[in-house]
Length: 249
Image 1 (cartoon, one colour):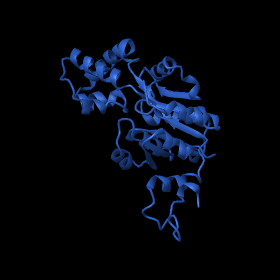
Image 2 (cartoon, rainbow, N blue to C red):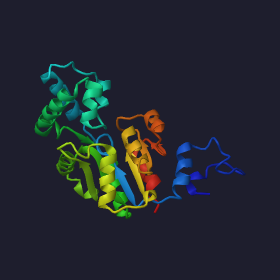
Image 3 (cartoon, rainbow, N blue to C red):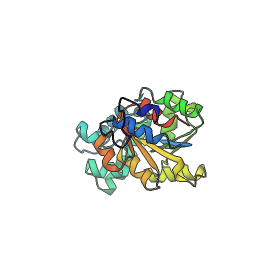
Image 4 (spheres, rainbow, N blue to C red):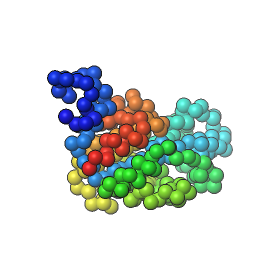
């Protein structure tokens, strides 16, 4: 039996020990799998960009003479593309949405972009994974230019092998689009070699659309229920738990 599954359960198999901690059960089975490619989300997984995003959303709605949103609704803007968020959560029509995106990006690039913090432990996680031979690839619906600027801001570009993001012209904005792009660039044909790490259902659903496995993380903007309902293969609470799952190759 694997070292992480050996507690005090004498004369039982891993299947019979129903009271065994679920995380270590997951770890036991996960260590039978190796993922050369780690795709990782940006907003809510690597960086907490909420201050800048929320500020610019409220300013955008104010300029459009639309009602301000409460904090719970604002959280829903982290993850999906703005073309989905503004009509769904802001109640804007198609024309208003296009105008809102223009206003938002202008404000965000001037003030909101650098209003962010890194989640503790995530960059050491990525560096460790790279040191042990994994390819660590950012897969984000955030525009490439914005994600790259934040990596440069914090001097952490060396923690990642590649950044796959959306385009400012509105193409490749869905999670599936940026995952597809990363797959193509790295010429990956076997999806069993890839795992997606992210904090929202969009990350999990994007991975599932390509037959990938996924790890949901709860330190961002999605909760355990959302991630499990989306079909995450594993849900963890800390970067150290992600490392424990992945760093066994």
